[in-house]
Amino acid sequence: MAKHPRKKQKTSKEVKEIQPLGSSFLTDDAAKDDEERRLESILFGTKFVPRDKNTLTNGVDNDKIEADLGGNVFNNLMDSDLFFVDDGAIPPDASLDDEQPSEDEASAPEGDDSEAGSDDDSASSSSQPSPRIQPTPPNPSLKTRKPPAWTDTSDPPAVSLSAPRLRKLRDAPSEETLSGREYEARLRRQYERINPEPAWAAKARKEREKENLAVDAEGGIGDLLASTEGIVMKRQRRNAVLPAGTLELERLRDANLAAQASGCGEVKVVAFHPSERVPVLCVGSADRRVRLFNVDGHTNPLLQTLHVPSLPLTSQSSVSFHPLGAALLLTGPRPFFYTHDLQRGVTTRHARGLWGTTFNTLNDTSSRKRSRSDKGGGGGGGEGMEVTAFSPGTGSMLAVAGRGGYVHLVDWASGAGQVVGSLKCGAGGGGARALWWASERELAVLSGDAEVYLWDVGERRCVRRWKDEGGFRGAGRVMAGVGGNMEGDAEGRGKGFLAVGSNTGFVNVYGADAFTLPPPSSTLGSPKPLKSIANLTTAISSIRFNHDAQLMAIASQEKKDAMRLIHMPSLTSFSNWPTSSTPLGHVTAVDFSARSEYVAIGNTRGRVLLYHLKDYGVGS
Image (cartoon, rainbow, N blue to C red):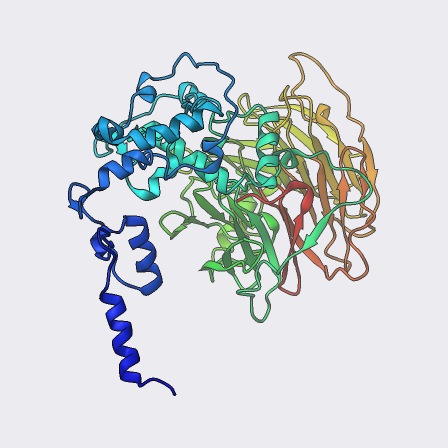
C-alpha cells in the first residue's frame, strides 16, 4: 500500500534538517566566489553585486584563496600570451618589476600557503620554470615621427588601462598606465589587427611611394589627408601618353540638360573655367543668355544665368574667362562690352568710349563717319569687339581685333581699360580674323588675307610674317595654338603647335619654330607646315587644343557630324570616334576642360554633349 503523501513530505523534511556532526554546509550566498555568483546572475537574470574582498565569510579568507590560486593577474590574458617558448634570453630593457610578486601575493600570509605550495612544488618538479612575460619592444614609428606642431593641454598625460575595454591594449599584466603617444600607437595597432589594410589602399600607397611623394611613417595617412584627390586615381594618367589609333572616351549626360535654351537656342560659346579646381562650364547661346554649369559628370546643375539682351553672341570668342578665373568678358558686334565678376555675381556694362577709342581704323575718316552713323546699334559695319584674346598667365593685357587690320592692346591689369597701343596687320580690308598669344610677349594674328603676323608686343614690332600655305584672300577662317610652357615640358620651350583652318576644310599644323621669336637682325623664311589635315571638306569653324597638346579638335558647322579628334604626336585622327551613331549634329563650339578630363561639344540644336576622356582620369 502506498504511503500517505503527508508522511512522505514529512520524511523528506526531516532528512533535510539532519546534518552529520562536525560538518558545515556553505549555503549562504556570501560564501560563493565572484565567478560562481556571476554565472548565476547570467543564468537566472539576477543582479550581480561583487563582494568585499576584505570580509571573512564563515571563517574562510577570500583573499587567501585568491592568493593561493595565483591571484587574478592572468584573467585578462589571451591564450597566445600564456604559452610561448622560453629561450632563456633576457631583453636588456626588461623591467625588474616583472619579477616582483603581485600585490595579492605579497598580502597573503606565509603560513596559509602550505597546501598550495606543495602543489606548486610538485608541478614545478616535472615542468619548466614559470614563464616570464616579456614586454614588447617600443614602437619604432614613435621615434621616426615628426614632432607635433602643437600640444593640446586638455589631453591627459597618462591613460589608465584599468577599464575592462582597455585591458586588451596591455603588453604585460602589470601595465596600468600608458603615455598619450603610446596609447595612440596601441589603439592603431589594435585597429590594424581587426581591420587589415585593403588591397586597393596598399596598391595606391605603393604607387605614391614610387612617385617619390612624402609618405608618413605611419602608413601614408598624412599624405592621404593632405589632399582631396581621389585615392585610387592614378596621377600618371593626368599626363598620360595617348596611343594613336583609338581613344577611350565615354559619353555622359549633356552638360546643359538642366537648363537648355528655348526657341532659337543655338549654342555659340562653350568655355571651361581655366582652373582645374573649379569645374564650371560656360555656355552662351543665341538667345543672348550665358549659363554657368557645375560639371560633375552626373547631374551638371545650373549655377547661374546671365541675360544680356543688348549684346548678341556671334562666335566662340564672344565669351571668355580671364586667365585668373575671377571674371567673364562678354563681347560681340557692338562698341560696348560686359564684365561679370564671378565672386560677387555682379555684371557690369561698359559704355562706348571707355577705352579712349572706338576700335576702328583710327586714320580712316570715312570709317569714323560710318561708325557714327551706326550708333543705334546695328551689327554690320560699325565698331565691334567680336575677336578678343587675353594674354596668358596673369591676363594683364587684352588684344581686341578692330577694323582695317588694327589690333588694339588694352591695359587690363590696371582696371582702367585704357588702350596702350595698336598694331596694324596688312594694308587690305580683310581685318584680323583670329588672335593667339604664344607667350606674354608674342602675339600671333591671322588676317583675312590668310597671312600670319607674329608680333613682339613689348617692342611693338612685327618680327615675322608669312602666308599660310595654300591660303588665299578670304581663306583664313580660324587659328589656334598651344605654347611650349605646357605641364610636363622640362625645357619649357621648343614644343607646341599652331593650327590654321581654311574655308576649304584643310587645317595646316605648324611646329613651335613658327611662333618662336627669332634672334635680332635675323631673317627667317616662311615656315613649312608639319602636315595638312584634310579630314573635313567644308569651312573650318572651330579648332581647340587640350592642355598638354596631345589632342586637337577640329569641326565645321556647315556639315552635320563634321568633327574630328586629332592625335598630335602622330598627326592622325582617331578611327573609333565619332561613329555613325554619335549625335554630334552641326558643331558650333568645342572646348576641353583644364585637365582634359572632359570635352564639351555645342551644336545648333542647343545641346552641349559631354564626353569623359578616360586616359586623363577624373579630378575632384
